[in-house]
Image (cartoon, rainbow, N blue to C red; front, side):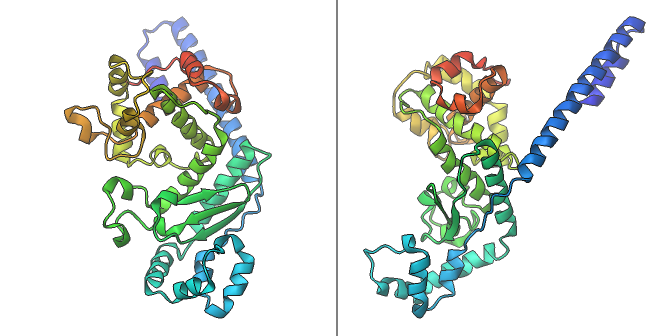
Amino acid sequence: MIRIWLNSILKIENSPFQIRYTLKMVFFILILFSLSCDDSSKTDKQILAIDVGLNIERFDKLFASSNPTELPSLKQIYPFLFSSRFSDSIWINRMKDPIQSLLNNAVDSVFNDFKQTESEINLFYQHLKYYNKSISIPRVITVLSDVDYRNKVIVTDTIVLIALDTYLGKDHEFYTSFYEYKKQNLNPTQIVPDLASSYAEQFIYQPNKTTFLDQMIYFGKQLYLKDLWIPFKTNSEKIGYSESQYKWSESNEFYVWQYFIENELLYLTDRKLLDRFILSAPFSQFNLELDRESPGRIGQYIGWQIIKSYMENNSTTYLDMLLMDPQDIFNNAKFKPKK
């Protein structure tokens, strides 16, 4: 960026006034840039100084290494993980089950060194606590879920469960029968984005999601919270895209928006629009030849850009924005899609 400014100076005609004026402008911009960096650095230091007292409990490893005689102790420490509907014999058989053993070994091979994942989870809670000081840090417990990818992360006020067998890597043999778009986010790098999504759902008050615009704004709010809470993750990881899918979204943002406007989709309440542009899918459905080139959930991406535009053009706090009506946000967003 600085190089561009300097190049612009060299291209001016040899007018002393123009040169002095341009130099003053560059100097002014550099000062603003420096102040912005200082503010960002100060915020980062404050976030990193927060002690969240996080201690991730590896219940999955504990259960894998336990024998039947230790079951009463496990039930005492983790009563919420042992439903009273099942007798002890069920859990004892599970300890001896060869399929359970395969799951244990697979998780251990991927997460034997848990430091990177633990560091990211800790960093997430530091950001969460910085932006939401009243929040209590829960017990974070890793479990196995028999590869239930629909419930990878469960969040309550006091307990968070993370099913590590749903994050073994998209090419893992356990996921062979899954659709490719489902496999895509079964990677260790998606643990923290999924955790952030689960928290975001609890922060956003938007009871009426009837129109297509409502749905886009709702998920846009979620993704904006990820910008605050997990800035150390890439944009593609925040939304759960591959790098190529995210680049496609950036490159075609203008044309996607044009399609939505020309087809007057914003205020429609047709539930089919959810499947076409909002919910997880192999691709978005424009009913055009380019469909298979597009990523699914492109409506979420557009909603994200609308929210970012609103926050850039208004002085509203992010907490107030979360409570706002989607139409009010859209009316004041001044959203101009990238060409």
